[in-house]
Image 1: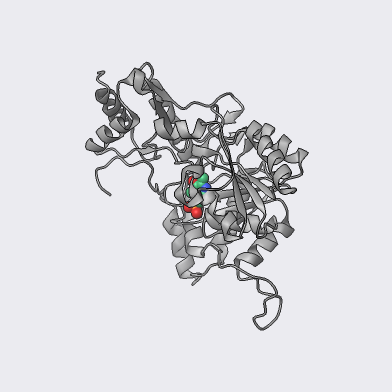
Image 2: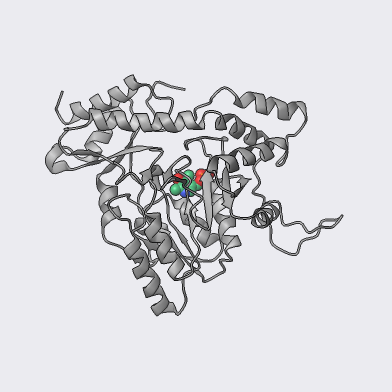
Length: 380
Ligand SMILES: *Cc1c(COP(=O)(O)O)cnc(C)c1O
């Protein structure tokens, strides 16, 4: 597109157009059709469980419908990871619910299990009710500490909606992220692991549940020859054209995951020993991230430069990098929400930087990024 080294861009595999052409040839230019069915089958097979996957127009829509399925109503509280993209939290408010924000731990940068339990108990004491759902996130593709989180959720009988929007291909204990909780969310936006230009999916447990999601996603139309509605519906189904891109992308998903992991390994090797720069690593074998984005943290006392010095130096070299997500409890739009914190996500936001990690990047481009960082902090 241009000669800037980007953070993460769409990366076509070559099979996409054949699926789209088939849709045109058979006039399936619709929000249902054979590509949608195929894409859902590919995804169900890939997640490797009995789960039934429903393709939707975005990851945000998947979170929204997941919360509808979990019967989140006005005034209900939903516990969300604070350190995330706003799309995790916004849908709670679409339903009149109240997001309760929980900070991250240092190992995975995801929801801190001990703060989660503290939040549950405090909400129970303050409101007399338990939160309706818990939304942990596998940020940057790093699996959250799901065993601990699920044990707490089970203790209080609160369902988990897993935000795996950044974690397609990541595994926790050998199981695909998005299949561990009660429901799971995937995203196929332009910069995610694979793209449908825009799209998402909800990973459901049963056929019946999946049927209900399809019903809600197609305007909640009752079974009648005329248009009749007994419930509020949504227009959230993925189009057959977009699903065709997704089908093509499934052919290269494994390659893309491998490439992102290889890029992370290159950064880890080449940045080793650079003072003040730490590459985010998995905390143990149970965690098998897709390394959607490789992230570093910068200690200015050791590096002699701040995160922003490095970001601006890279920008001058035509390299895009970006600060880590600004936590939701620091967002003006969410000020005043209940927050259970320890300072971890604030510190990560101040010191962390996402590096170019797209699967189409070459080793030479990664080397350019590394050299940019090194020359910024005066080592060559
Ligand atoms: C991208 C993303 C979403 C939303 O997905 P869309 O398909 O863009 O709506 C939700 N949560 C997280 C953590 C994301 O990164």
